[in-house]
Length: 89
Image 1 (cartoon, rainbow, N blue to C red):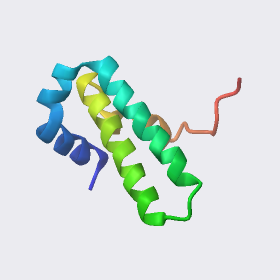
Image 2 (tube, rainbow, N blue to C red):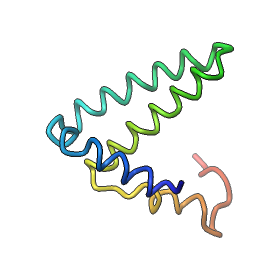
Image 3 (cartoon, one colour):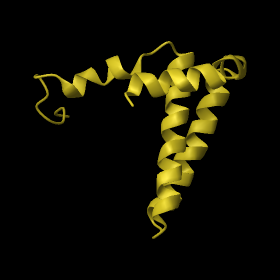
Image 4 (tube, rainbow, N blue to C red):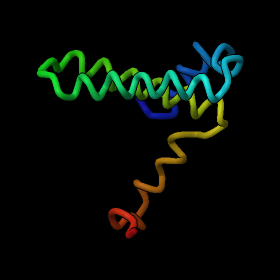
């Protein structure tokens, strides 16, 4: 499945409700899931890690949808020929 397909699936299932909730509240849900992922990363429970990665990605897609951002296009900055590593600080 492509990123755009997953983002569209999330949109079809949740976007109406997500837009009603708004970006600030949705961002808080996203941060909560990131916290759960952080906890999972220090455990030995691979299944839980997978579930938390999926939750974080789904909420990221939700934020992108209600911000009118196409994640697959946004990720192009990492897939093009100009990628040379991390940006210098």
